[in-house]
Image 1: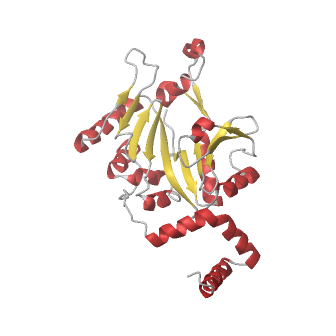
Image 2: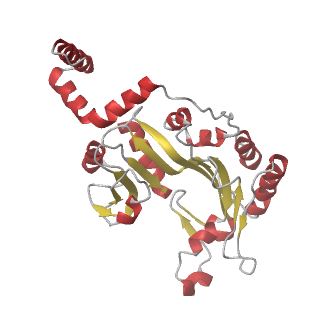
Length: 306
């Protein structure tokens, strides 16, 4: 059995919102995605993952299930993450609420293949690319247990772009209580709404993690379609074409420099964004805020502040 038509979707979407944490958390509480309506679970250990944040929490739905995570802190821009089946809706919400006001720090774009022997068909394609480009090619599996599930990586997991192929069906079987696993013949795909034989369910995933020097790509990914993530490198686009027949234009990763003026503007918005919003409401427009600030600046000069 093969699934069609071809579908590529987000499986992980993590972004920094260019607004103070307090305001973003407030908006999430008011009308968050994936059934989140303000119920949270604090994660002190998770907060320590990034040094600039002093708080991290899970966003919970009405059933108490975590649908995403938020890192926040006073005077800093928050990081918001959605993964798994919540990633498409979470990404859509961020793009709707913060269009042009968030940039991506990690995004995974996945493709599910349902076919007998799919893993054996795709891995040699990955191996050929790895050999021709002298790339890392790490395999993970259990040689004595063919139900444990195998994973093949193309590229280093420390790099900003890498691809993995893994047996998604056997991963789902591993979630079944140990004594019942041998009795399960099919697993449920929540996205495709179908039952699948575990040995036939394969997932291909492109992981893109642009670093702070690749700000152009961080902003680009905040509006890119899932399939365009595979265009982050020529070799990933090639694998996509050979494995599933989907053609995507490779996009060269560019490193851009941020000017001192742009950096100062970002710091200003980050530190005083809440006040800028309040002034805009009081004065009636963003332009009026700029005029007010210049009047203050002139006044400072008159009293010897310059």
